[in-house]
Image (cartoon, rainbow, N blue to C red; front, side):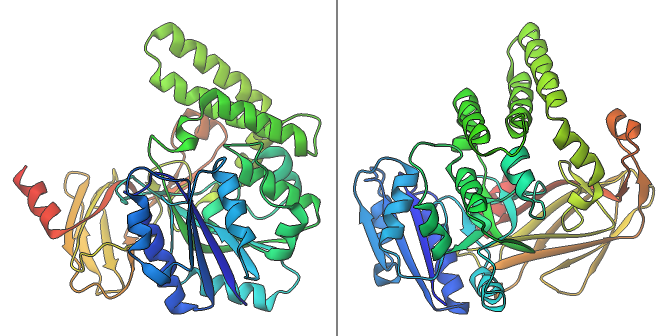
Length: 409
């Protein structure tokens, strides 16, 4: 079974090196992979980074295109594999993703699409959160209520891609969701694997963050095109989230109130999502991290790929807990656990990883105490309790030079 991985890129010199490294690392564990990079004629030196890898990138094309979906489709016209996926040039894979995905497809010939879990990192690759919006597959939920499939962590067979005739060029922000909906309409069988497959880099310049009203208008079009309900519930949900963001960024009190009222209005319209999220409130937690929050449960795993050159980086971990005399056992990459006690409700750990021998950092936290309680008025009203042990503040990985600079300043 052969993988064809396409990376569309434009002016991403700053990020694409990590993307390429993640694909090449995966090839060490599952060699039957072809890698195609399609560049939209970048002006920042992106081409130099790609060409520095020589024949390790199987095909590199740099020329003007009609946008991201056009670049992806162009890449797949040259593909010769059985399993397709695309990874944007600011995202990247966990080290053994292809091997795990191949096993699923090989053991389940009736499965057309495999999707897994995804980690969000900051622009400089520091752990941010997990994609806790992930859900087990439901065609109704996908087409009517929400896009719960994270694109970097999704793989599909060539046959279903051909049936759908590629990604549409009509959409700029949600063409991946539109493709999943068309795949569903063509009878594709989806499989959710509760494994971390990929990383999504989240920062202000990304399309999702800057789309605003244009993005909402497009998502409404997609929702109306594929919904299995009378109302576009997904559009209502996305609108509620967008107006909450705008309220937080509003410059005046009147604007803030206006956006908050719009957010509340669309939140009430997205009643399907409200009911679903309330029903599966605790099920949406991933690896001990409570969804849509910084709360941590009793047992937690913080995991993310690491492709930087520094092989003895520093882990800087900052936690808080209001539980008296809270303690935690911290294990990094399965090393002997370190027992730490919270001082004045805070804990700061600076730990140097000696001779890192894999492209992944796994931090396991086992807290001695936890409380089963609800936080916030809304959660108390709905009796939505969590097993609270701590609150996550920061988890940064710094090189030795970065650590020295941090200590100096």
